[in-house]
Amino acid sequence: MTGILYENKSDNLVVDKTINQRGSALTLHFKDDSEVINPTIYISRTTNMINCNYIYIQDLHRYYYITKIDLSTQCYIVHCHVDVL
Image (cartoon, rainbow, N blue to C red; front, side, top):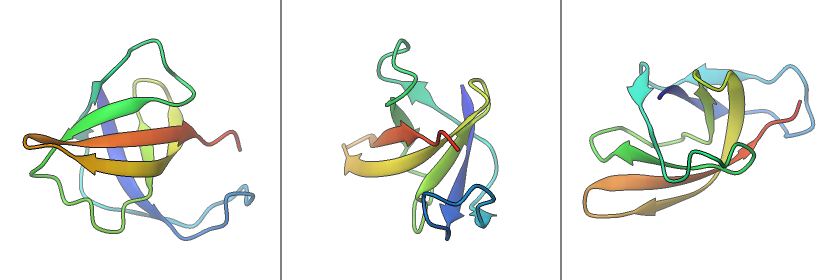
């Protein structure tokens, strides 16, 4: 799967959010393919995650809030929640 990282400067309740793209499209790996509302994804440690709090997952055509980022030795473990607006 592919995704694009963003910095979201808007409140979660705003429909037309102010977002700034952080880098180009990147490859994502899902921990569990069946979880669409609260997915956990793996992103390479070479990716710059500074100020990234929002992600668009192109294959699902959905935006997600990044709720938590854990580090492993090989990747970022990114916990997300769908943006219903």
